[in-house]
View 1 (spheres, rainbow, N blue to C red):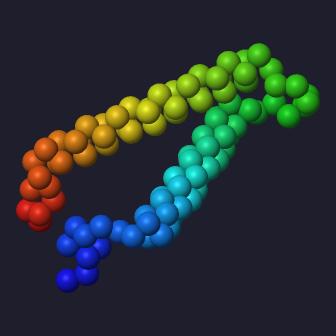
View 2 (cartoon, rainbow, N blue to C red):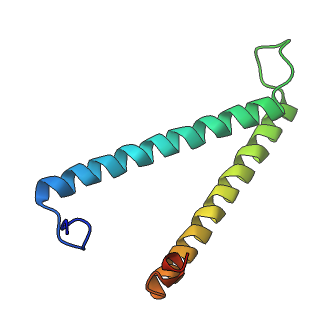
Length: 98
């Protein structure tokens, strides 16, 4: 059985490569989340294109939108971590039961 499958250790170069892959994925995910946040809040809040300036009403809307989306993202991350911790404590038995 391959050592990476049976829990064997990765070499230093494999660890660096794995870390690079993880970091690139995290950056891609972050940029996608940021892009989605900007698009959603812009679509929901900015609707007066007669002026270069953002109106106070639009600014308040954008601030609330961003706050709400960031808080919900943070909460989802917390729930994911809680679920992951519970699975780790159970030894992954919930994953193997399918």
